[in-house]
Amino acid sequence: MRFIRTKAAVAVAGLTLSLAACGDAGSDSEGPDVEVKEDAASEFDDGTRMKELAEAGAIKIGVKYDQPGLGFKDAASDTPEGFDVEMAKILAADLGIAEDDVEWVETISDNREPFLQDGTVDLVLASYSITDDRREVVGQAGPYMITGQQLLVKSDSDIESVEDVKGKEVCSVTGSTSLETIEAKGAKGVGLDTYSDCAQKVLDGSVEAMTTDGSILAGLAAQNEGELKVVGEEFSEERIGVGYPKDRPEMCQWIVDTLTEANEDGDWEAAFESTLGPSGVDTPEFPEMDACES
Image (cartoon, rainbow, N blue to C red):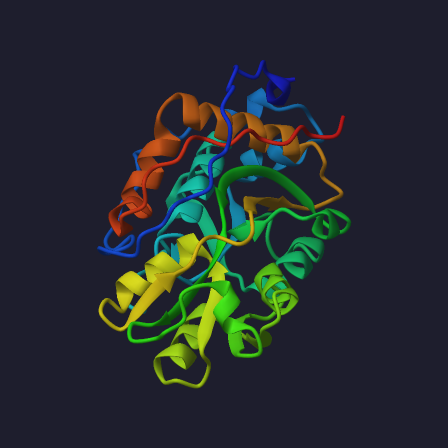
């Protein structure tokens, strides 16, 4: 079977991202030109979801629209951009589907599992942390990036670490693991619909801080340079992966193999540098991916 091709030795350890919020995260970014495979359907076994998608020549992928550098779409753009989006393009290209034929579906933290369960999307690449609880209801392959939770505060704030937000209101998006983690750290979690709403609450002083993956915060800080800053060390490890329908387990090994190949041929690194790189983030090593259940 094509999707159980030999995996190369990618004996590397995933490193968390050390983020410095500076520059212009993902603005006008373009990822690498990824070769769209011809006659991709012939490479997959009958009955697999990959063959169905390749034959259809279309795929629906859920991404976020409010995360500069990861998944972002402004009103003037037809398509989203960012590192998550570039990973999605690589997967689509392996199915013989060009990016113009991808149906991008705006996805928020709270609807990622429902969208995979009800068929609204075929894949989710939306800063989607891999967790045991989520793997109970959907498939998750990866990680293709490892980051960590930090804090975003106003530039003149005295908050310097997670210890300083105990008892204070800190926002994140509803349904995220970040909200659960910050509450466990003693802060009062405030759940909002989008990251941009949360950042605005910090800007207008409604909440003391915002928290989520450092990669997301770096992009927001870059968008509001001089007004917001990322502070403190990472206090969690977020393993970002690809979501797929749980009743399509064959997709796991295909995702792992395709993204591993993207690392080997340099597309993963080029995608990172063109999206998150401009925010001042050093390109990490490609993480070791989880084994798929046989």
